Length: 272
Ligand SMILES: Nc1ncnc2c1ncn2[C@@H]1O[C@H](COP(=O)(O)OP(=O)(O)OP(=O)(O)O)[C@@H](O)[C@H]1O
Ligand SMILES: [Mg+2]
Image 1 (cartoon, rainbow, N blue to C red):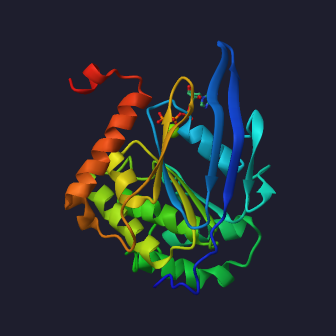
Image 2 (image 1 turned 90 degrees about the vertical axis):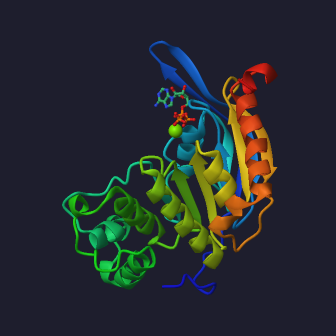
Image 3 (image 1 turned 30 degrees about the horizontal axis):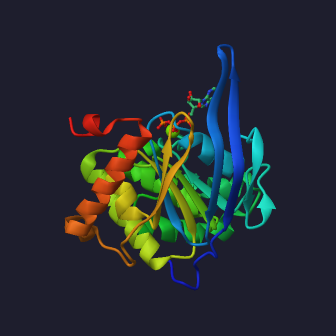
């Protein structure tokens, strides 16, 4: 299947204003987000990069409507996010497939729980599975699929309702290096065909952030806020071989410096 422009979603636009999140724990409050301000335009592919514990997942959960902010507000296409919205697709680090359902049934699950007729969504679900290279595996249960295949099913499940916003929290980090590269190539292909949809991609990988996105947000810990907002200097359609260019090396090195800063490293420590 080609996710043709005619089928492309109109991407969501996102406004994040003064978002703070504090978790109350028995050991006292933990400030996970210390005031985030971000505007994301329709169709942008934005990576959120930062050290462990800087609040990336917390921000994504707030965008998903799964974890309310303590203060501030998030609007998606003008509407405040108070609960999960149907037009937001989510992919987590673990594929979280239902073990008793087949690949196709897992992809159709969001339609099922929304009380929609599965038959109306089945052609799109099959086409998505085909598009990610899983034609012939529709009737396999998760135990018969590799890690990369399961994550492809999870991606199809997130896309089945034609979301205008796709949220991804380290979706490839549990995969081996070769499978990760394959997934990155798939994402590049999908975003070449279907540039309408907005995407937010949480990652620890400088390589994936530079390769996949239009813009990289670098977050830091203490305070958990935005350190840098960097446009990616590579256009689309984009191919994997962009990584072999000196520009990619230079851009990755720039991001690496920002990550070191986000971790509070001194100039001397960065060169050890
Ligand atoms: N449900 C929770 N209850 C209490 N504290 C939490 C909860 N969720 C997150 N935190 C804390 O909030 C901070 C940010 O966590 P978060 O999971 O957002 O970080 P992260 O940037 O996604 O980290 P990682 O890269 O390791 O996934 C951490 O200090 C974490 O311990
Ligand atoms: Mg996380």
